[in-house]
Length: 74
Image (cartoon, rainbow, N blue to C red; front, top):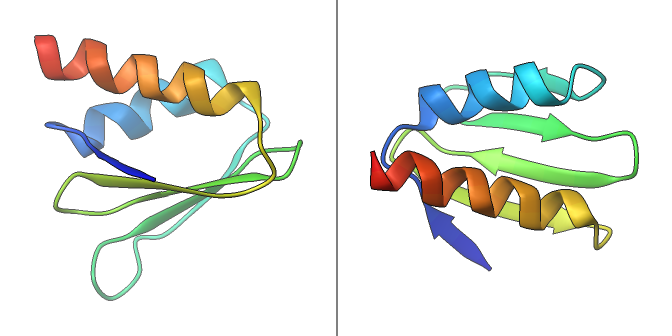
């Protein structure tokens, strides 16, 4: 399931702050960042604001979704 974030740069900043052990790579040729968490969750943050989740089910997925909701409200 993908969700939409109004400010993908801010989301990446939040992820860096809250999850210092996450490995962030990118951007690739189309502006996508890949975030790999120690528990196996993978989050792709696209330049257009789409946020996609892959891999293991993780409570971090809900936390990221809540952060996106906060960003979209502001």
